Image (cartoon, rainbow, N blue to C red; front, side, top):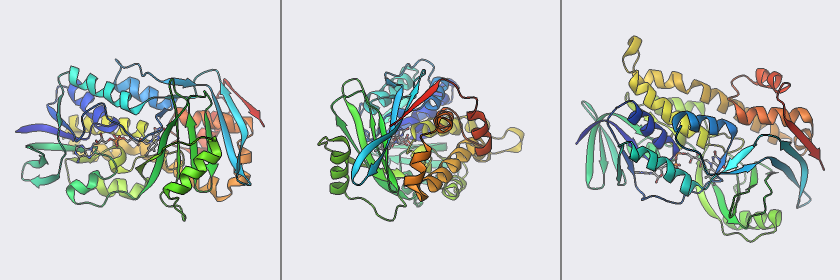
Length: 370
Ligand SMILES: Cc1cc2nc3c(=O)[nH]c(=O)nc-3n(C[C@H](O)[C@H](O)[C@H](O)COP(=O)(O)OP(=O)(O)OC[C@H]3O[C@@H](n4cnc5c(N)ncnc54)[C@H](O)[C@@H]3O)c2cc1C
């Protein structure tokens, strides 16, 4: 079978790509190894920026999420988690979605628009004279372009080294309505409220000197939230600009989107936004192949630029913040930090100084120090 595009993986990155390809009348096949709805280890936190990107790609979807307008930042002092400051906003600070339902609703929207979806694990992607041969279980597709959106290990399908990654733990607890982020050395714990359960979890950064094992994380979660929660470990990549470039320059016509390219915020762990947006940008680059003498691959790297800039700023934030965690957590207590935070989760932070400047004009946020 031949197609113009094959998309591997029906997470936010692959689904965004498929939705844009369908909208533009480009024939494609979308593969996923799982039948939907399927579990995906994820906090399900959607920032205002993600909601905007989602609306641009899937205007028909109204995400069924829990709106959070109050968020407490906490730190651990002598082994006990304490609220440091609570940010309160007139507009939602973020939404919590259940990834099982969320991804399924995006997939249904793609299929309703005559997208070709197959449940089959892709085992290998082979370079051919006219493009690529995507080898699934019981199905092989030859296509000119391939969008690899198969999560952290996507690069292995073409025998490339995936991004560095760590394990983040996720579970569900009884609903409390309280949202919090607790900073720990080289990592964080979160509690995001939902309708019927809260999303709870945590982890340390993939490049942290001390990686926490399951038992240590389970103990920390119990101590922090006073709840026994069964946790599941899921890999999360570490963003690295060189890796994004290396993967996306490896083969003309082969695009790495979302976690497959390591497009996550190294500070907060946010990745849904960058998965949606990079999937969209890969599809749009295919449409522009050959225009003004540029290949689709060259266009994709240009189109990724705002995402990459934001993720570089995120990484710089993380390094500064965790270099002196106890001191910097105190900085969150200022109104200026509250505004900066709202600005950060609402738009791409291409230029740090400009973002700091803009945050002076960010309204509708109050804070309460404890
Ligand atoms: C514990 C945890 C909590 C998180 N919390 C948040 C959060 O609150 N907010 C946020 O924005 N981000 C969060 N993230 C990050 C976010 O989950 C990811 O960045 C995002 O899911 C990446 O989307 P994706 O489409 O690139 O990959 P995925 O969502 O991983 O989707 C990949 C898809 O590819 C399929 N697949 C894999 N291999 C193959 C194959 N060989 N053949 C066919 N199909 C295949 C999988 O079945 C899957 O459906 C969290 C991550 C973790 C681990």
